[in-house]
Image (cartoon, rainbow, N blue to C red; front, side, top):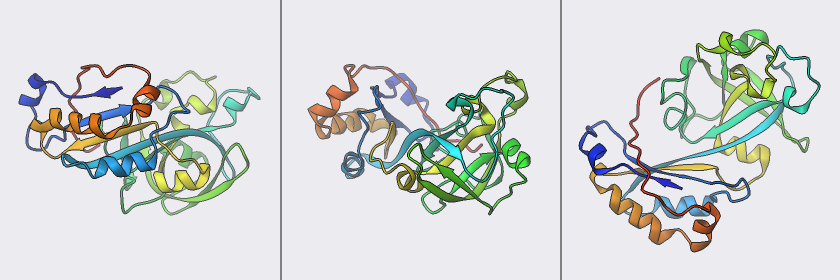
Length: 234
């Protein structure tokens, strides 16, 4: 599915607005590959891209926050989300989360950003290393580069399994994510346009570049669904 801004919304886009086209897969096995991303970056109207991947992980040297006594796997895992640039295209850009200390994940900042409640529960601070493990037993140590809050932590049901709790959402850079999971591909890619007025041109460029196979993987035909996105600091 590709989302793009409408003509009406484009007229309201200011100088600081970053207009984008968002591609998102419908099936986990149909990821957008790094080769696809590299080709997209070379398109004329593209200024930058922001890739997202997601998975679940087990904690190794720290404890998750949970009020559930379930022994199911869902109560033993954290939710892991990876970005090239965490400040954009995430809950931080939408004001759902706010960074309370440290830095966002960015091109020159690698590591993880964790919730303040999780940090407090384990006496963790910026610069500490925590270890994550995938379902195959591979482990990767990562440095804490940022700490965030949502404000809704205390409003969650007490018995919610750990993987669904805000406190156990962990943000990671895409390079470290690929090292941990050894997978090639992303669930979502935000493609930023150099000129907001050229979104239609960017869409045409993407149509020409992306293979028929990728379109088939996306399952649904391209729809004129609309969305204008702006960048904002959390």
